[in-house]
Image (cartoon, rainbow, N blue to C red; front, side, top):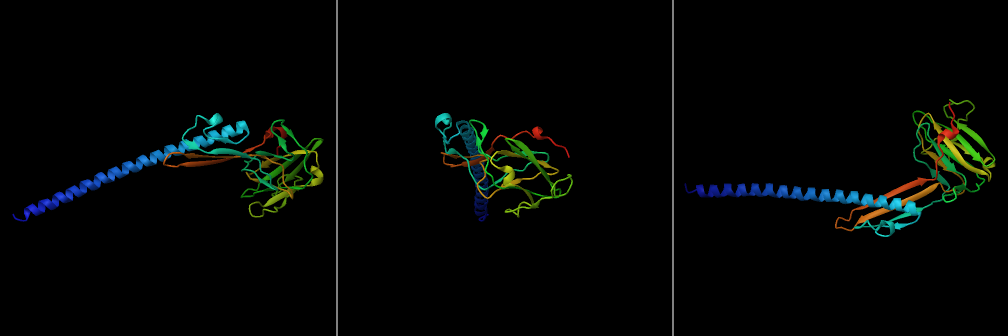
Length: 252
């Protein structure tokens, strides 16, 4: 009988500890869920703000800042969207699907006048990937005074097509290539129209000097002004106008 009060006190203490543990666990989970929800909401808002800045930059063709000009209505976020037109002696496309095409400009494209400037007489090498099924390329050189076609098929499925050469300088990512000679390009060429057959592939264009600009790179970043400090960065490449494949349709 004398031990009973101590046992009751011990049981009460254990029950209180259990209840407190459960309450604290529920509170912690509730706080964590609330924070996660808030972060997800801020993340979505930051992404939307960054994308809005990209739209505004493309429309104005200039750098834009969140909270100013046409973006005045976007509050609670800081950041800018900038447009760059980068020049380099090489250019890589995104993956082009089977039977898809890509328009590669050989002269500088004027967005306002929608005209193509004079080309530079230099060799241009076109490399492509290979997989289980090797792709083939039909390249149409468009000049102001005529056209010329080149066919590359490593698997010899197309009559009178070359089998291609090893890609240089990028021998790691691309297996085959063909070179459009400077004598063919001259100063009157406008663009290369490349069609892909049998399998998808990326295209890698290279030359000894800088190639003409192929489009605009827009970089946009939006950072939340709240304590979360959520930041989203979006990079978009907008190529110059791509000509529909129906204009140069060929069946093999």
